[in-house]
Length: 116
Image 1: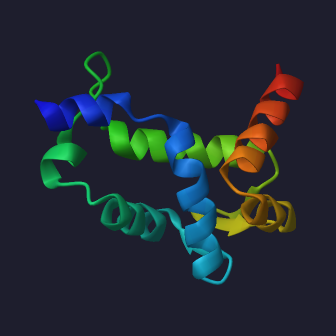
Image 2: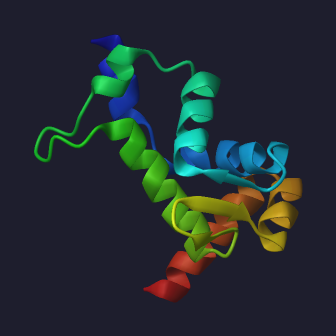
C-alpha cells in the first residue's frame, strides 16, 4: 500500500528535470519508449508501481504522468516532437536545464498562464 500512495502522489512536475536531463544525456533526442524505460530505471519503479492505475479511467499512472510532463514541457518550448514518437530537447530546454528545477517549473508555469 505504501508504494501505491507514493505513486498516486507523483506529480507531473516530478518528471520535468529528469526528462530534460535524460534527453541531454542522450544527445538531445529519444523515443517515448526509450524515455519511459530510462525514467523507470532512474526512479526505480517496480512492476507493481507500473501497474497502479487511475481508479476511474484505468490508465496506468506513471506513463500518464510522464506523457503529461512531456506535453507541458513542449507547451513551454523546452521540448519539441518534430517526428511522431521522437522528442527533442530544444535550445530553450538546454538553457532551462542549466538553470535547474525552479527555472524549468517557472518556464512551464509561465507557458500555462499564457495558454489559459
